[in-house]
Length: 196
Image 1 (cartoon, rainbow, N blue to C red):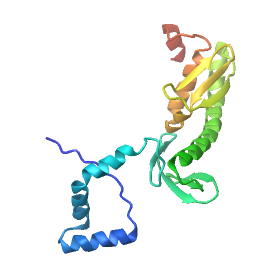
Image 2 (spheres, helix red, strand yellow):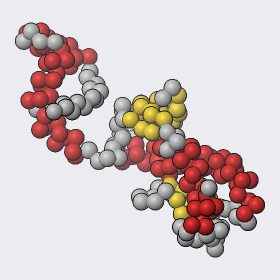
Image 3 (tube, helix red, strand yellow):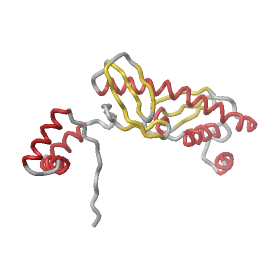
Image 4 (tube, rainbow, N blue to C red):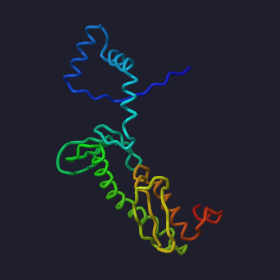
């Protein structure tokens, strides 16, 4: 039977790291072995704490996806500013609670999404305009269960903010899908024929 291993990053202040090192050497164990022993002995407590963390919790070291790429969130205290560089998203803020951090991050992500989605729509539209599809108004929304939607009467499409986690090709596919609904409101064979 295969053993399931989970790999995670554990950040410890230097003084805690030093103390664990001293305790490990007293018991003649490697530091990794000693930390593993501590975690095994306290696994239920660690799991209980982990389960209380909301899935949207924001914290330093969190893994985030941005346009299909994996990033690590680095949070520092200071004036609100968020930047991406070398697979790290640097977030400077005075927010200290996860709800405030998430709100600021989503606000920044919405700004990024507006520009990214508009650029992709501008790239796609010339390929579909000859089918009588109007250039739509676009909105970005943080939706729970759908990637996008359209309203033919108002000539508008709505794209899910969470698409910013996906690869640009995936976003393009959602935009094509919503634009195709301006010709066919259903998911008929004609609808899918237009997409291909």
